[in-house]
Length: 176
Image (tube, rainbow, N blue to C red; front, side, top):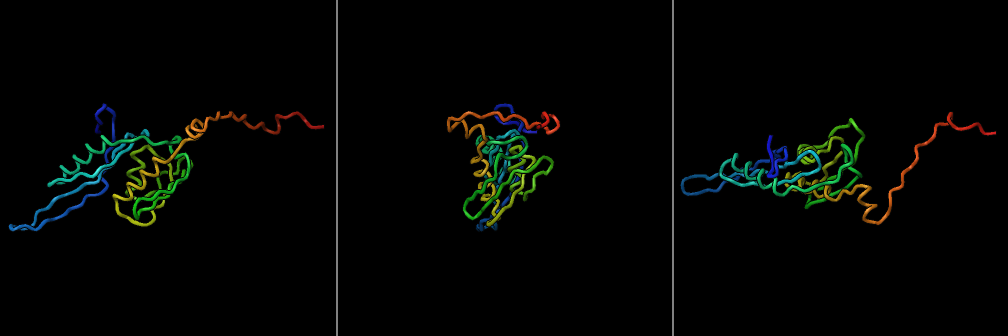
């Protein structure tokens, strides 16, 4: 259980760890980079890439950076308000809302972002590149472009009309 700077509980998921090496006079020097996604499961999510000489330090740095970069996304109950297609470099992501009980149908990288944001029912397809950093960025770009019905109506200066519930045929008076 981790907390962001404001005392909010956040989940931290390590998406990808990369090891790179530099050849020096005495042998190889290794350094690590960690891609981490954090979220409060209530519509706020962020990601960051941390680099260090040790894996644990890279993860810690990425987690701290990601907490500072958390942004809010629009959700509709446990799913997303509408379908969206998003691209970042070669990574292309399709996100579709799903009915309750469907679960998160997604690959490892997209799942980390969606679960951190608090999405519980969604259908996804990752197209194109499988580069973890670009898939995370494409998914987050898609989530940030989502708009709720209320937000769209408010921006257009319209009022949301309440629709009366349909009346069952038995309740209607007989037609003569």
